[in-house]
Length: 313
Image (cartoon, rainbow, N blue to C red; front, side):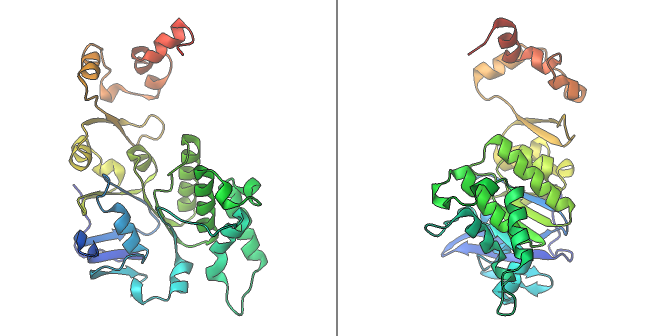
């Protein structure tokens, strides 16, 4: 497995031998990790493994009890709050909007770090807010109260606020929470586009396949420690998935991107017996055509029975 050196190479943002704890409970000890500049870094791992805690430390929401987090060559805790907010945008795991605030007003708060006594609201601020709402498809909600929205709509509004901040570094804790699958893919595509434009993205995700498809750099955590980090194609293996998640799986190429695709093995006897009686295609023989109606995966699935036998409920 690939690991970041104990003394990270220079990067805009990194943690150097930090210990992270809440009161008397230690989450991570002697943890070092660097965020590659210009990367789309995704942190994965089981529940309560320290993913969000690491993100909180990288964003200055949690001060290390030992060690330090460095941003642009300076200790993060020493940089003035407004200066940090101009460089680093954060979407926390949960956020609460002020009562009776509209969508447009909340998104506009992303521009607060750009304001000062000498620089009030400008055309550039308005354009940034409009662009952020368009990118997250919440423009038609601009006049609505945030507390009237669904969970998925609210999540997109919070993301719009972070985008309006226009920082070179974006940290997002479970940004796909509450989003349906279409909006999840739309958001991940948007983050990939922002990364292609030069922004460094750091996200905590639970969906391993989203992580493998979109990340340029993957960090796998367990029990507060980093077990592996590197590109998904370099570090993701059946052994790593089982070590981190305790999940037996098969890794095949994503038929769309070629990135690793994790297919969990069935654990129940019924599922395993059903698989044992099917002439399975070899992993190395899987191609884009395997996932079409004429391909072997489709022929072996219940979908083919429903297609041939009627509506299938």
